[in-house]
Image (cartoon, rainbow, N blue to C red):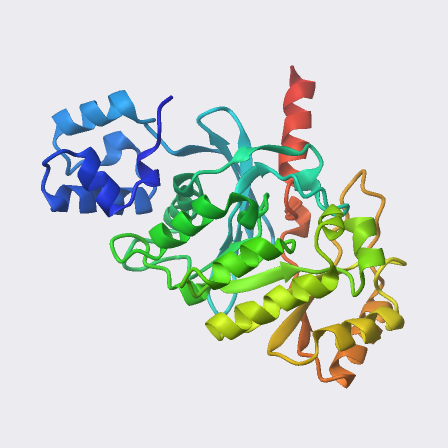
Length: 348
C-alpha cells in the first residue's frame, strides 16, 4: 500500500532518499508542512518526483468540502486516500487562530454527546494525515511557514488522540519541527476522554503540550451514563493522572465540562466538582452542549449554566465558558461528516 510523504521526519527521509543531500530532505519536510502534493515540490529534480510518485500517494488528503460560518470559523471536510472522510475546524480568535485536528476516522470511546463516535472507529490517522490538516488550512487562509495563519493546534476533532498514542506524538514532533510549521508545543493541546495510562505516558514523554481532559461529570455514576470509558477509569483515577501530569510538566491542566440538561448541571454537581478538583492548578472549560441529532441530550439553559459557573467561582475554581463557534456549520465533531454522507447516499 502506498504511503504519504508527510509521515516522515528528517531522519526517516534521509534513510529513504539513499544518499541524497540533507537539504533535499529538508525541502521535502518544508513542502509537506505547506500541504504540497508531489508535483508541487517544484525545487526537487523531476526524476526524484517521478520516483516518489511510484511509492507515495500524490497528495496526503483532499479537500472535499469547505463550509464557512458567519462568525469567521470554517469547517473542512477532507477525503483520505482510502476514501474515508475526516473533519477539521478553523477557529479565529483575537489571541491567534486555532485549528481543531482529528486524530482518528471515527472513535471508539462512544461518548453519548458526540457524533464522531456514533459509527465506531474505522482506523487511526497517521501523523502525516494529522499534519496535512493543519498545513492545508494554514495555506487556505494565506499562511506560509514564516507567516503562519494558524498559531494554535487543538487535538479535539474526531477521535481519541491517546488511543492513537504513537501517531499523536509523532504529529507533535512534526508540527513543532523548525524545518516545518514550527508550532510551539505550548500552543498544542492534546485532548483525552481520560485514558489514564496514556496521560501518565505523555507526562513521562518529555513533551510539554497542554493536556485537556473531557471530564463532563463530578462522579462515576453520572460519568458512566454518558462516557463508557468511565467503566475503565474512575473519576478519581482521571484526576490523579492529571495531577501527575502537572507534577511532571508544570503545565496547568484543562478540564472540559459539557453542561447537559438534567444530567450533570445541578448545583450539587458544581459543588462536587469543586471538591474533586481542588488542590492543584487547573482550569475548567464549561461548554453548553452542542446538541447532536439522535443523541437525545439537551444543553442547559443560560440561567442554570450561570449558576453552575458562579458556584465554581465561589469555591475558587478557575472556570470560564468556552466560546462557541461554528454552530451554523455544524461545528461539533462528526456532525458534518454524518450529514455529508447522508446527502451523498441520498443523491445516489
